[in-house]
Length: 143
Image 1: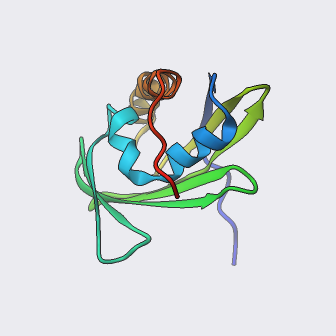
Image 2: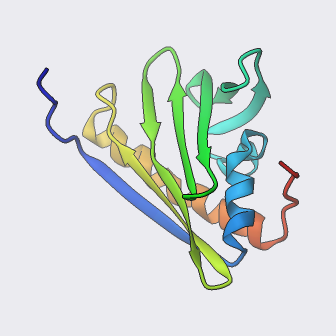
């Protein structure tokens, strides 16, 4: 089998003045995503499949799966909707008393370059919302 060529990607990050364990716990819980992913996710509901969450998004209905690994700070997640499916690698890294949240986007084939640029530019709004919510003391649900 022949591997495809690398695709276009973009990595963004934000520094959050909150312990890495708190940032990780918050991001690993899909119920929190509408509080910070304010551009893309309007609501999240549990489904019969404990790995997947039903979402209401700007593109309509979709599904979210978070593949969290606390040991390594991974909060990789998968999205799927009727138009496309994609994986987003993400990681929480300790930084002093706080944390860095890094997230990488790979351009799905369903998006042209202009739409990818538009969508990824909106992530800055979401990362700013994440920083504000967590630094303003968002409650972290026990796992």
